[in-house]
Image (cartoon, rainbow, N blue to C red):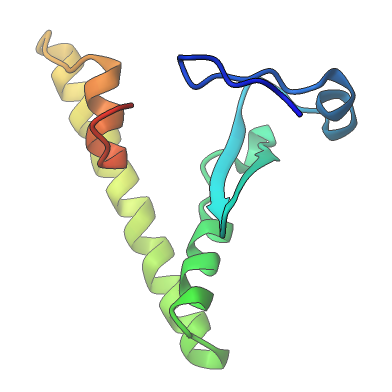
Length: 113
């Protein structure tokens, strides 16, 4: 059991951290009533395949329609990511931008990031 601070933070026990070879970033998502943390490998940080497939399976896709919808959504995700990067570049060059907490609030749709 671990303690959660008032800032919603907790320490991953060293034995778990070492066994999973965790780095500076972990993937975090809900699975039912569980909070799941997964290691993120450098080469897979920007690969949303697992997230897309998890959503499609939950939506009931199967077989060839699963494959077709997966390809379509992955393509859209990569296009959206490219657009976000380009927009961020333009804002940075213009001296504009948003604080990190505002960006996370917008991305996650949460008021209490």
